[in-house]
Length: 482
Image (cartoon, rainbow, N blue to C red):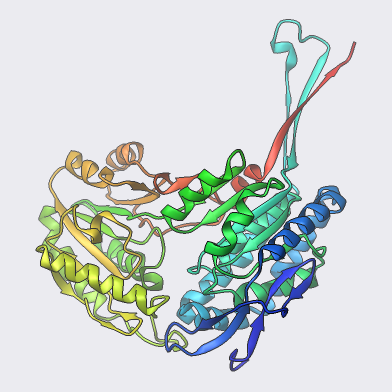
């Protein structure tokens, strides 16, 4: 697979690729060099209607009746197929998302693991027996609860993890016995189109997963407002996410939105351990992760040393072609995003910030950048930067840094580095985030943990087990034995 230049993909509905009939097209570009690597044929309102019709029909006729072992088997076989074709997926992630080879390999490995977690999860969807005789009058009665799939799930996914974040939505949905209408990011649709073939080969019934290609601005309302859709799961920008929740009405909604993750370094931290973690946390995939290290708070007496070491290690990172094995930092997803990031840096400098390393842009490539002398009013601090930009801020006391960290509209994950376990647990209790890592950065995520934010960072939890629970309804069944 040397080139994808002539690849054209359409929506996939009821197992068939939908193309032609005057549908508009959109180019898919390699963000590193701007080369057109493929095109999508965008779905219409009628295609969305067809996809939801199909998903609803297949749910009632097939998926909700399918035994757990069969759902599990399909997901397990898909994981095995992905493992065999891993190198093809790593390459396509580099081409359409600009993801360096080493990071693409991590994403594919995680995606395989997500499928295997979901395969096991399909066989472990439990209710419980409820002791009705705990209540007066409950003698000679039995109460049980059971989980049932909700039905049609709409999944809307972003560009930054075109495989793994898709699987965080569709794998739990299918494990629970639902059907899915997926709208992937229009900048990274080729990975999804290729992955669909694996599910099909593994035996997923036609119409259990339907994919509609095209811009969310054109398709979103049709997907979100249809009464047959029972659950919406979205990862993306805050304004879009909260608009989806508003439009969704009474539907179940999970939102995984933005952040400007705080990471706190106390003066007793092991710098030899935390420096590599911070570099990885701030600059992995060019900072295009909602839990990237953006706000770094460092106790004042170690501030100069830590900044010096961060600068030294950052200077070793190679920026360039994601297909080169030595590349650590590839391009941002588009030149407009790189221009925005560069403008935010310049704005911060004009407001008094100092660039200690980086700060320059070439086309879509942005140098890994560290800023000091920043404040909480600067956009590089108070908004989500989504670029390889880290701000470093000194603090004196525990109380002060807690206030700094919580001074944000966001709250997804945080990192705390300290050897004092009592202090670590105190901060874990008071930091206003959905997750706190001790002696690890905010970037860390395993695919079976409860993952989700507070404040403007979203609502609901992902992580295979927790997503399965949210994609089912709990029903009570009472039995009178008299």
